[in-house]
Amino acid sequence: VSVGNRLYVSLGLGEPVQVLDTADGKTIRTLRSTEGAEEIICKDGILYLVILPLEGEPQDYQSMYRDRVRPGLQKTLMAVNPDSGEILWEKNDKDTLGILPVTLIADRQKVYFQSRNCVIALDKNSGQQKWKALRRSAESRPSNFSPALLVYEDVVISVDNLVDAGNGFDALQ
Image 1 (tube, rainbow, N blue to C red):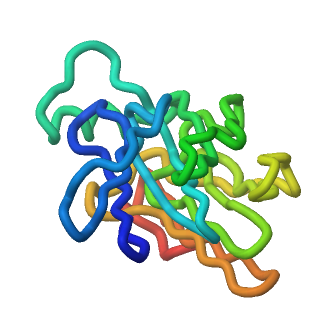
Image 2: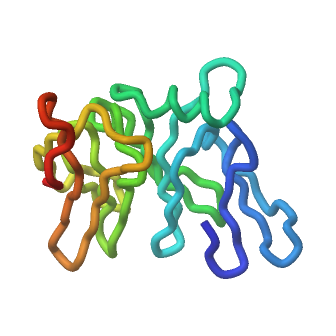
């Protein structure tokens, strides 16, 4: 993620998130406890990360990706101040079990994500749950398809496909 003159990136599989100066590429800070970051978004100067630590030695990208998208993997959602490196809050519980790829989004007040069976909204400052809505998700999907969450004002839209065992893929739900 690039914001202004800062780049927030993990430089390798299982490596922590680093804050780089975009002008010279030099590391300004390494953010502790961010090893295994899968997703990074920035809203109002705060980073929100989905973390799934690697188990064992890093693998090649394709093997690692296959292993990490299986349903039921315990992930951690965290908010980090990139200027100080301070972890503002963490969520690691049954709700973060199997956070679906690329569903982490934020607006002025909340952070949202979709797990295997629900969409959850958290207060972006405290990490406290604001609401949870049941939302069935496909257990398997084509490798080029990810669910999507969109937020506009007070409306959240979840787009995903559901697999029908007899007929292939149903229409988007």
